[in-house]
Image (cartoon, rainbow over all chains, first blue to last red; front, side, top):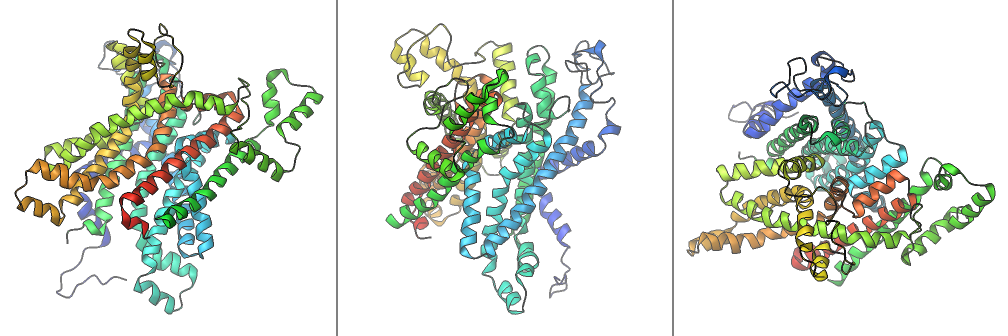
Length: 298
Length: 335
């Protein structure tokens, strides 16, 4: 492994501390990071954090405004929706769905994308061409349209929406991995590993892949936010999570007709989406700055 | 140069066939029988069913079906809509100008605001302006545009009553399509107030659709400008005593534009994806809304044909951008 002491005796910080050192310099990224931690916390402990069951209907309190508005009360701090469900509980539970979507989509698209990208970078030319042309085909369709059509084939549900979004986002990982692999493959350390007798799989996953990870991690963060956005858009169009699931996009679609009567039922779910996506994108920018060796000043 | 063009065309062809293959497969991998769907709730007799199977060519071998489909496409035959019984090709081109008009307006907005914002941010790097502009750009980039549209409707249509909520023009006005672009047709019609009405209908959809491209262009312009501002010829220009306006506006911006132009060209796909949401919310009669409606109505030939047409348009635009880029920047051709 890497020698932690340089010649003049100064110890080099561990990779995580070094990463945090650079990441900390970007204030926006740190703010985004803490928002993201809050989001994950909500997602993890949603059932304990939310005051009510997100699908429980309080028929006597339909469209009650938030506490700071006239007519609001602390019983329902962020008000209730057209069916009398507590907005706060639904928003907290919604974090769970969005987080789930992000994790699942990024895991599927990144892992398959990395495998295809590595294959494409190492494979003979014809296989490389085949893989890249298939990716070109997927990229020719506007992402949301392809996801919509895939969901139309598979049937509207959150699971199918996630599969569709993963398929749509995957080519970016393939291209990115392939490009880094092609750059890395020329380098001496790869040649020496090959000369030392490393097999194809070892070269791909142990020698080259760790050195290609930086841009893939950044892309992972960006895909996480686009997955949340796309899933919410599909939910909004009625092709994602189905009511009464408290998914943020679906909540927006359900309350659209009350837009002029009760601003909070429309504003709050959208705000939740925006803040989450913004936090992740801020973090992604910070990640890029911290992981990109070209930008490091020392 | 010819070799460059040919090599690009050569990668275009397999993608084109792949896209046709996907849209061909679409109707065949759907759960359920498209003919039963077409019959609707009334159902159909066995005889009629067999007739439809022959008419749609489902009785032939798969390869033959694909061949027929492909030759049909090349002759502009995309089948007929289940619902309106009109050729999909005609419907597409009837609605396409509405989407193009909206997209052009959105792009103009995005460029007109995004370029100066990026330049100002880059020139004031690290200062207040830079931070404020880039924070707004990141917010725009992270915006769920369907929500953004609803917010704008609440404020501008609901509270202030400045803009209409849906459609392309007030029902008061009627005139024939000449170009398909409402802004131009309304002027040609000579009716008083028609142009104003068309423009008012365009404002909110344009803002909504332009938001993400605007943010992308601002961010891209800033980073391209920062890269260029560090170059030697900028230092030379400064040493010659040129004014900052001239250095930033002419020497730097012109060189920074190359990556920006590429981003603009490649955002056609993003625009069309955004058009799906924007048109649905504002009931804008373009291809985005048409596609969504058709998906819900299970009008499969329309979905199939629309999917293909949109993909082919995106591909042609990307190919042209690619070639143009090769013309502007000779370095690319050599690869």
